[in-house]
Amino acid sequence: MRLQINASILEIIEGDITQQDTEAIVNAANEQLRVGGGVDGAINRAGGPAIQAEARQIGYCPTGQAVITTGGNLKAKYVIHTVGPIYRGGASGEPELLASCYRESLKLASTRGIKSLAFPSISTGVYGYPMAEAAHIALKTVKEYLEEHPEITLVRFVLFGQPAYEIYAKELEGLRT
Ligand code: ADP
Picture 1: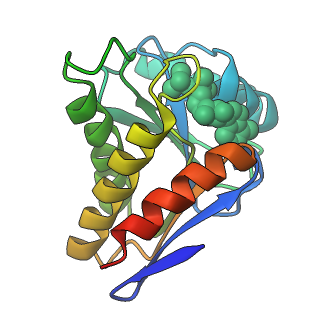
Picture 2 (picture 1 turned 90 degrees about the vertical axis):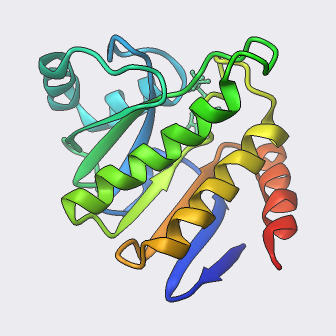
């Protein structure tokens, strides 16, 4: 399912982010930039040790910010690592921090001349963010960014499993105005 925003595309698919051929894929990292489980583990396994080697050189990324490394053996040339908030009930700045993850990742892409990128659903695994709330923030933030930044031509959300896809599809439908 896709939404056209000026000349840019915002799309959602069900799939595996490690297999995407966008110029960059985004990783749901932790502040220490150490290999974890979930999507982080999958990206590092598929991309090989070069990703973690560069991440260790960078060393740290605060929650809500983003850093960039090589894509190693992935089809994507780059991995943008962003650190989502751990969900603690929603009144501890989580919505703002989650929006910041998407915005900062997109800004980094714009700065580096990256035109296409794929996001997983940040914070909705181990970090516990409720999927529908996270989907709303994710899609709204990306839509607003694309409205102002035509240099990014494609943003693809890659949802892991049908239930996640369905939730994102419903939220994306709600953004069609
Ligand atoms: P976080 O710590 O930010 O919650 P997780 O990696 O635990 O990160 O989960 C983030 C989301 O990524 C979850 O919704 C999970 O289902 C999804 N996910 C896990 N593996 C993949 C994959 N290979 N491709 C896309 N999404 C994935």
